[in-house]
Every structure is written in C-alpha cells, then in structure tokens.
Image 1 (cartoon, rainbow, N blue to C red):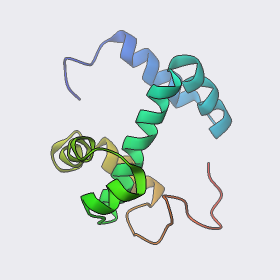
Image 2: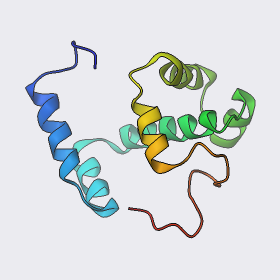
Image 3: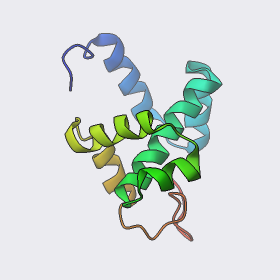
Image 4: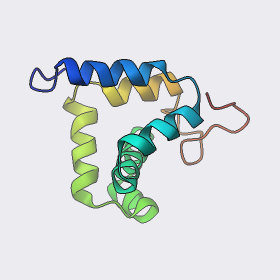
Length: 111
C-alpha cells in the first residue's frame, strides 16, 4: 500500500468495511460516507475493471458504460501496475472468466 495513504484514519475505515456482512450494510455505510456521485464513480470504475479483466476493448467499455477513455486508462494502469486490489477482489469474486453478464454470475447468490 502507498505509504502516503496509510494512517490510523484509513485503518479505521478499512476495519469498519471489514465488519460489514451484507450488501444492504454496504449500501448503508457508503450512503452515509459518500455522496451519490462518489458511490456511482466507484461503482463505475469497478465495472470498468471487470470488463477489462474479461478482455473487453476500450471502445466496448465506453459503449457499455459511457466512461471516459481517461478513466478506463486509469483503471487499466491500476490493473497492470497497481497494488493488486482489483485483482484480489476480481479473483475472489471469480469475475475474470468472461462468463458473467455485467459482473453478475447467474444462479450464484451474492454475498
């Protein structure tokens, strides 16, 4: 992790996120913590990471999400050279196979 980010406040936030058990609890915390625009931006970046990991082109991602190529490039750079946060989560969610539509596996309960 980037040493410039790491401090007690961020540790507290990470610890708080790790206590969440349901999607509804996540929605509640993020709604209290962030603006709607911030939440949408985070979700949009994560969707870009999913699509990039599945091998979609920038054009396909732009067409599907409307995200700027600058944002797509930023996410791609994180996937290639970042702290592996996206890779860890995508691997654990099993979203790299390309079999899922919009990042959701049919028939698999979301946790």
